Length: 309
Ligand code: FES
Image 1: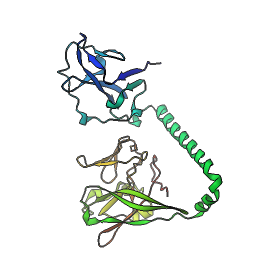
Image 2: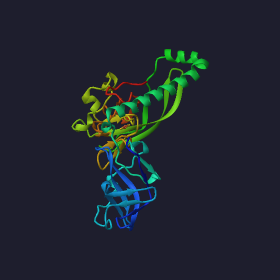
Image 3: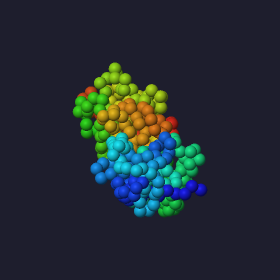
Image 4: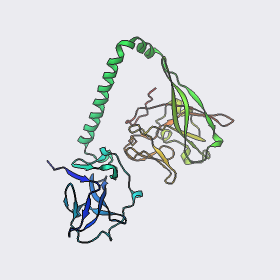
């Protein structure tokens, strides 16, 4: 079995002559090759990218480079070109200590071996199932009657009129809109705060006025009949695993921070692991520009758009 490599952030970095030339600051992980390829060293004036193969010795207290001089000629580490990722992106076989300074390129699940991806999914599915079972056992006896009564009650759809009108929205610039709603399931009525993406279009001539859900035929009859060429409403929930994609105005793209699914303004997925576009929600525009929407949630992780409630 391969020995674990431990990087301790902040330890001194020396050149081949034993001269101190900086400190270890970050690691760079190349997602396509699923391995750490560079270290980032603060050489007293700036951050420099140093190839991993230059490491001659790595101990708990020092990192020695197989390089005779300073790091002057090496490329400067430009943080805007990289993204910090959480600890569970670390590739197997590496351990990082004092890790708050760690920077890695994100590891996309598509590049994991299938068995590793499967075992991660299995683990998630089993642990979710176990927790659900435990919660279920603790609830089913005392409130079983109410649960059965709720299950027989038809779920109702609730349209809500937003506090913003169409003419208050910018054209071709998604706006995140938050509103108060009441989630209804059988006998339960729970006040909730919801958010949706509102994307106003200039009209039918705008190619992005047709959501990708419509183009792919993923919409239900209700969603099909309640859409507008003037406004697309997108769910804030990433259809991959449920994170919240954010709009990047400069790039004109939605990007999900969790596993970097990338979507165009009409929800079309153009990168990342998401199995379908961002979900379009039903909308109705009144003559005075009032906007009513129907908030829906859908099953994540599957290519079909299956409504949850
Ligand atoms: S949750 Fe995985 S890409 Fe959005």
